[in-house]
Image (tube, rainbow, N blue to C red; front, side, top):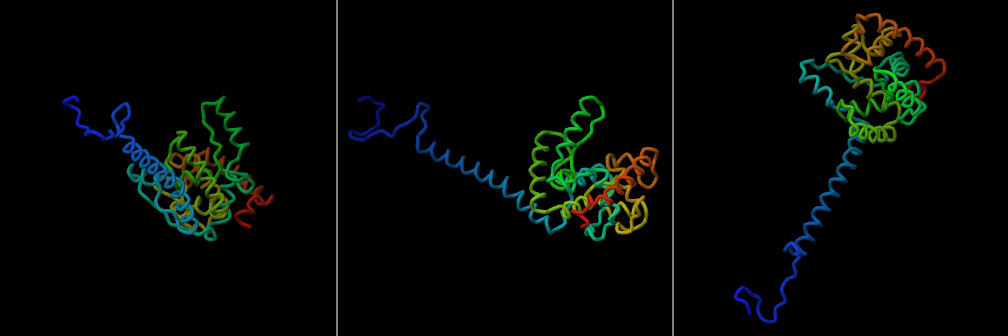
Length: 254
């Protein structure tokens, strides 16, 4: 017997793998890793579902974009208003400006996406094809970025809010969370800052002006509109009239 052999006569050595690790230890480590992965997947799936369910009834708190703007020194102004306390003119104006098919799609407007892709292939100016549902998902739950990861998460949250919230709640959260200017979020804050009225008292022209600045709220002004905003305001007013006439706002205003 070798001087280095410590195995007693009749004992069976514990088997080892080629790298010297004990199979039992490796098995336990594998189970722990699998358990952690399952836990992470459950949190990643259940967490968003519970959050979306809570926001079905509770006003969403400050968003990542709002925090970013605060860090940039833009201030913060936001006053939550129920949908009944927001002018129907603003509802029709944002539908006309941002998502004419809001009441007929289930979160994604495939035709708008196709047109946006075709436009972006031949133009240096990027056009988005996001619906109001997608914008709400991004504004409330995610961060301002154009990465594939964020777009994937945006799609997931869009499906959740379409299923769990419905159109009126999506519109309500959107109109209370969208950025209307530096440090100005939601219809009530925008109405007070730009026109000195409450959100429920916005006129057709005032509502159209607010909707007109949405493509770039840090660049354009609703209270002192330049040529672009004035032209866009006129187009939005005309389109909002069509929205009302054709009952394309029925999913929100009934």
